[in-house]
Amino acid sequence: MTKHKIYTMSFASVYPHYVTKAEKKGRTKTEVDEIIRWLTGYSQEELEAQLEKQTDFETFFAEAPQMNPSRNLIKGVVCGVRVEDIEEPMMQEIRYLDKLIDELAKGKAMEKILRK
Image (spheres, rainbow, N blue to C red):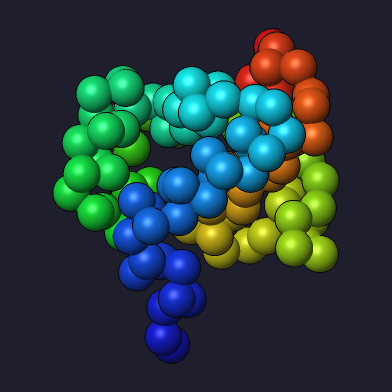
């Protein structure tokens, strides 16, 4: 079975799209980074290093220091698919991030996005 194309894409190639999506709605790169750090456990320096290395999505999530245990509270639809129903673990992690960025762009408060 071939891997989904997103797994081999560089995280750094998609990251600017996350930032642009947030900024178009009046949010900030700092908030995008906070979401990514909350989800993955990367420090800001580690996140920047991953971006610099052009790490692919699969490696980015596989090397994440500590995936947030509260990520299973993320519910909803991304690209027409309920994130809680995705069976492929790596795809679910990617879609969790997509959902969090969507919530940011829709103006949700950071406390709610970060499931506090």
